[in-house]
Amino acid sequence: MLRFLILLVVVIVAILLVPRTLSRSAPPSEGSLAPNFTLTSQEGTSVSLQDYRGKWVILYFYPKDQTPGCTREAHNFQVDQPKYAQRNAAVLGVSLDSVDSHKKFCSKEGLNFKLLADTNHRVTDQYGSLRNLGLVKFAERNTFIIDPNGKIAKTYTSVDPARHSDEVLSALDELQKK
Image 1: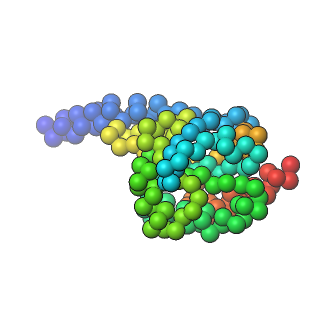
Image 2 (image 1 turned 180 degrees about the vertical axis):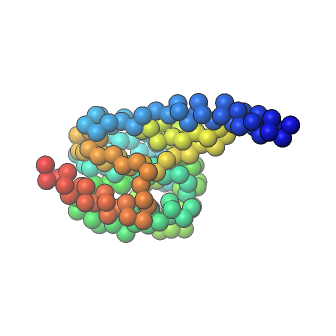
């Protein structure tokens, strides 16, 4: 009887979770046009990808405000803001958190770059970064370097938040040599 119950639970979990995790959108491929979007920042203003034409954009997706890995990644991007400015690059962070959550996160952690609220999950899904575990949805830790013409120049999936900003800056240097 116990084996039957365990098997039943495993089958139910598989039926509920497997299709949802397999149905994720694929990230846009390098060289393709980056999907355009308009989202609201922590400041309550609308931010569109097309606002950044002529600049490099570091579009990074992260799971949740005020969690250890996300805080570390955001701090590293913040510390490196002058280096991004030297490279004509803007950093935009995206999660499923609300504008209010982003505002508190930025205030608490001293962040001054844009964090964008994708509360309807549309942009995160367009960029193949939406993780759906049944009742729990979050953005996977993925980053896209978008060139000044709006094309995906480099893609990172499942990044290490401790060293990611350095990795992105090195990639920008290489991409800008071309």
